[in-house]
Length: 193
Length: 261
Image 1 (tube, helix red, strand yellow):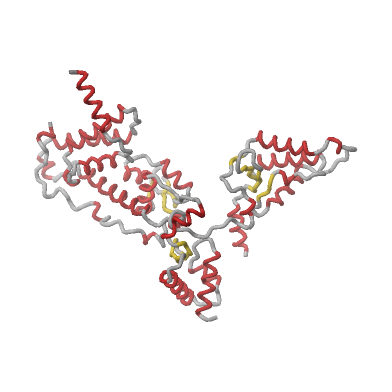
Image 2: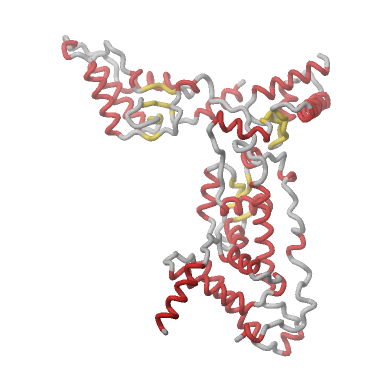
């Protein structure tokens, strides 16, 4: 099979499957081909979809490849599907963000970072399958440890967790000593009263 | 004079925009931003006062104040009092951390995750900005109830059965011939019809020409299956058709088949 027809076979597979297809899965399905060739075909397809101004893009999500509609056409597609898509409350988003960046993480840790009880949010995010329980922490009480799921990556269009936008200066969270240059306590006398 | 003060306070209260705060950290960040304060150098007395004012307002408006808000109020007051106390010589020697340091760290970290959450939601979300192909397993898509199914009340189920019975004319009874089919047998028949995640209508299990006995046995089998949690009985809309599906997730069935390959 020429590389051209391999590319078209891969395209067909991507078209038919309703979930992201991983390279591993493609290698299994196309056993007569080399992994490197399959990768090359995927790269070529991605390039073609990106440059040809098609209504479809080939996206790398959740460790696989998936054909998706072009985001600019969302309004038109909504006319067809009549769905508005997910809508998150601020608390759900905050919780997701904290877990995405800090996983594996316990509920108590999430609550410390948010400053509020997060049991209800965690439960509904688990029900929506955006979170998963990755284990139990080996401390008294054996609290559950949470992480994000494959569905989370699919929903937010992330290739993997490393593709999360970098939380800038997360290391700077504990600045060496922000108060080093403030020997005197800057209390406004009026405020102190 | 008194009434004047009161009306002033009332006016002020009404002018306050009540925003929904996610929690005490959110409220503190809001106060810091509103007053254009330096987060590394928070005038703790002023921020504490404003924070408590906000809590009072919530109380006045009969809003439930979550416990976390009170904990933060206590923390703020504690920091404030620690900052008022002079340091003991030992503490000075040990270079004690600024009492505000932990709070500042928490605020900064919280702010980062909040920013991250805005970034997350500004992405192209599947089902919101981007769409992928998605189809229901097999050909069920056309048959299956489209709307969010509601669970069927027992009463409706009985009603449906009564309708089935009424379709069977009274004259069809003849000599009592035991049909021989037991509930157990009928259960396995029904299950086999549902195999592979198929969805069938309640009515399709009752054919014309069935004996009254068989109708009753069929109905009892459905109830039994439901009790055993082997099937799910749903309805797309009230008074709509009643649908039966096997309780095992249809997705799982499909996946099992893939694995078996």
